[in-house]
Image 1 (cartoon, one colour):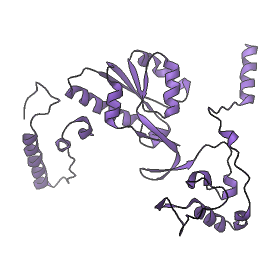
Image 2 (image 1 turned 90 degrees about the vertical axis):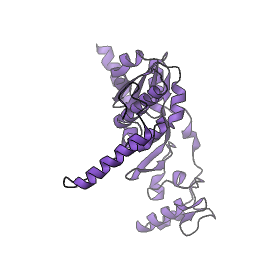
Image 3 (image 1 turned 120 degrees about the vertical axis):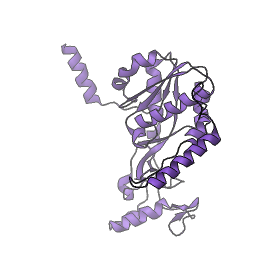
Length: 229
Length: 51
């Protein structure tokens, strides 16, 4: 999932200065699961903002809503009328959700309430860890299902550097060496011979931004259906 | 949360008590009453009754 964290309260307050009616819009998918921007977090932030506004004798009206996904237009449509009645929208989605919402609303400022951190996994309650750099050229099959691009701070694809010591990374004694993890995984799978493979140069051409993906079959079917109508 | 807003965090506290813990309940009530008196009226309730 995409993992985010809420921005500092003071920063959010600064960004909202001058707006008299604000919609706080949560996202019910990734950032909801990582407890940063779901319905509960919308309620908490709204309560905080109302208290802060009241303490400063302000009169900003705070509205609340949470939709299933902010990165999908069909869900945004359900809150368009409310959003357009406001001076600004405070989005608690990831950066993708914020941008689609801003594209849709155009004339109404959309302010991010979160910092989008990474694509990761839940390690335990309240702890998430990055696992994927979305490089567009997945090589996990070669590394026992552990991504050296992500788990090694140097993104080395042909074994560890000289800084690997007792399974730990030179950047921090608390951080596992990604290549020690890969070695151990391949050993458990009986595939240590994979360590001898020399990986070709990583194809970074797959990381052109903004990346775009089209499902040709789906687009073609949609076009054919519209022509038959 | 309250501290971020500018309120004293001491204004709210959750106590876990059993149904038979009357002395603890009374103690918690006294503590919170004393705390409320010390902190003064809730600034969010302007014009409301004072403690």
